[in-house]
Length: 253
Image 1 (cartoon, rainbow, N blue to C red):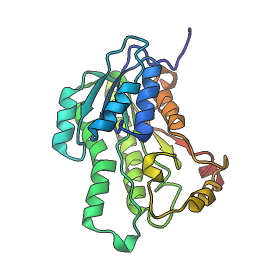
Image 2 (image 1 turned 90 degrees about the vertical axis):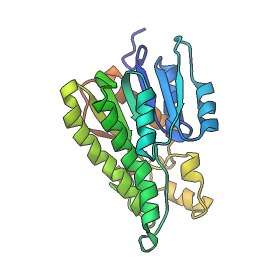
Image 3 (image 1 turned 60 degrees about the vertical axis):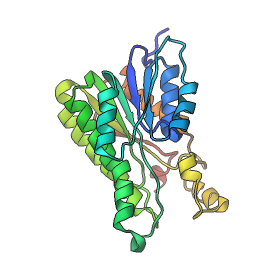
């Protein structure tokens, strides 16, 4: 059947695949025929994701445990991955901290994962020619730092805003090999990362959800399917753009 969103015969690397948006993206990619290479730091949770990957198309999926917070970890990952037709770059950690409490340790931890790891991975995949001509590279950014500004979110927001900027530079430089680069900017998505908070109550979350036109937070698979659109040939004339997956939050602010 005709399906421009099919990922059959494509090999896709999904980082941050042990939970949340990364996990949902890996599973959804496999359902659409992709051979998926998943990576993350938590071996147990990565194995759980691996077990959920669809093999209907006869794919031979691969899992690689890697610590992307270090240059060595990224280099080791790049050395192990096969030639790629797509990348879903999702690795990220949250933090809620008022500006007056920011310190170098917090900055290093968040920026190394949320920004620097993405830069190092893209750089090495391109430099080592692990990205096939015509590949698609999709970064997961956030409306935090571009549309949504709240107390305690400065470090996280800055780290994600930087991803959208870096994506556009990648789109320009990687175009020499016809590699497309885009990003998705989700609003609040219900994942273990976003809901594991001692700072906010259930009532806080419910009140915040009212700021969205759809009156709810998003689901990981809703972001994953947008990422898949950008990975697929259906988006073959789109590069250097970010797609909002925010339930109308931006339109309402």
